[in-house]
Amino acid sequence: DAEITQSPRHKITETGRQVTLACHQTWNHNNMFWYRQDLGHGLRLIHYSYGVQDTNKGEVSDGYSVSRSNTEDLPLTLESAASSQTSVYFCASGQGGTDTQYFGPGTRLTVL
Amino acid sequence: RKEVEQDPGPFNVPEGATVAFNCTYSNSASQSFFWYRQDCRKEPKLLMSVYSSGNEDGRFTAQLNRASQYISLLIRDSKLSDSATYLCVVNIRLHNAGNMLTFGGGTRLMVKP
Image 1: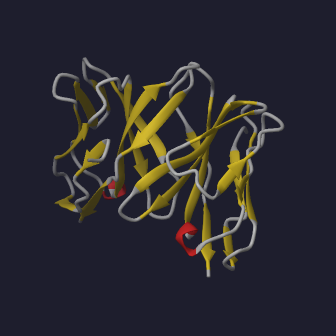
Image 2: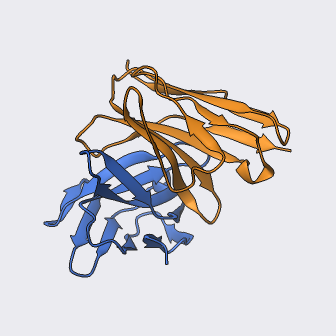
């Protein structure tokens, strides 16, 4: 069955380290998204991509980067992790021209 | 002001009760609307889309009022398994036919035996 996966599911890191969260989908969706979810803020968009080599900044992109070298993957990199980036991160994908997004299981990141 | 606002709850209701959630959005250019459900420590999942004419899916009814920029979700005959957080979601179509979802903070529902 087609699916969307994230790894790792849990990560503890230290301030200043570079961290990469993986997202992989097998639906062949053009659109992929990264969100973070924090108490009091709900889900907020970090970056998104509408296809290979396309990336765009979302609402809270500072300190994050993404790259889209193929259809299936959109890794999210924290260049220099900060404690304010402790959060739950969700990746999502959706077919271009449609509205529905399918979410991965999430990655719980703690920055000490 | 948040783009999508919801009462965070929690709404504590007995099994079998009818419960309604409301949501308001600020961007009049919003084009499509959804309710997602999120269980504790899980990913959001699409519950239903919301259309201007109103739509029903079993015990769930969604309504949209574009003039008032207001969305509602009604759950009839609540089940224990309905306990979750319900996210109001608004979609704005962007320049290159992509879409951007804006999420409300969610309304937490707890159904008690």
